[in-house]
Image (cartoon, rainbow, N blue to C red; front, side, top):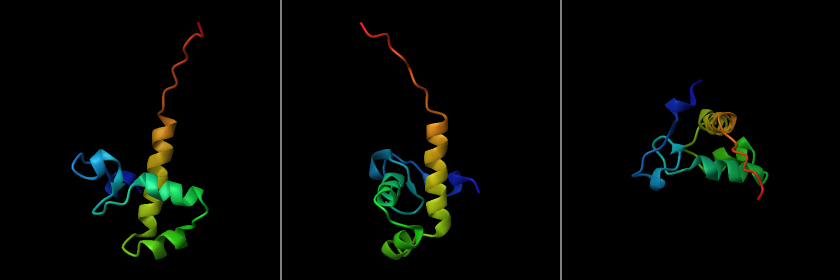
Length: 77
């Protein structure tokens, strides 16, 4: 699966934060709920229009962003 089919970022929707396509549900919200203990089943119950693939796409998006993150080390003065 390609997360780009389900996760989009448009400056006119949620100020450009990545969201599940066709919704205003942000990747951040899904990750936050999961970090608080929500399961995929919980998320599907809370947001009935979501699909399991949307949740997986959000996780794939987040892992891809972190995998490509660059760390810049500054010397302490």
